[in-house]
Length: 240
Image (cartoon, rainbow, N blue to C red; front, side, top):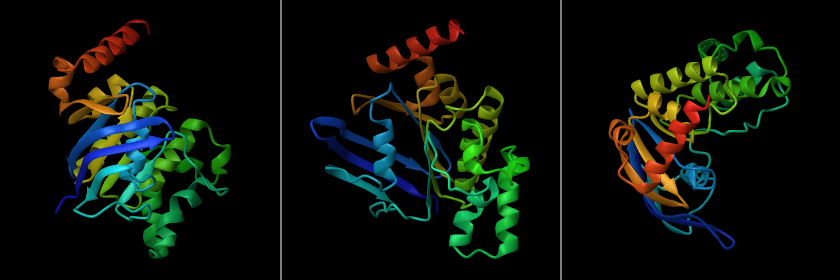
């Protein structure tokens, strides 16, 4: 049965700043939910709470009815600035498989397949921390994919990628959803959201302002915040 994610009326504060205010959402395996909003809107905080890395001050988060754990093997998180080990690219991708004691041949086959799909197999012996930002991002993404997560959380995962490699990663995200993974991706990149999203959720100042099918949002946003995002994205595209 596909994983079910429920976020119910979550508040999160950092000192005097409210990062999330009464935020709620639902998502299921097989779909891509894209979180949209400007910097500081609460997208990254929401992802960290879902991943079990932050605890809400109020409200509840449930994965198949249970609170999230930071070490939940069903959950993969790819951050905007990935933390890679002082190892080769391939060793980074293999790390989680080895920690789970997967058979060596099986682990190496899975790592190679993921790296080939993301165009980084030729970098397998390179020190991961000496790769470019975009290459590091693809290594981190491959490291998450090989563990076959049921919930994949992406925080501006295409931010450091050139257009061709961004499309490569987006294709892989859609592939994961096709095979039943629940994907929640935070971005301020409207063209990427248009290509990826089944549903869109708009955040502003920690509040959920709008949620619904991506096609409806891009045709006619219902909220002032959504309308402002779409106008800004269209203006940005015209200036390229």
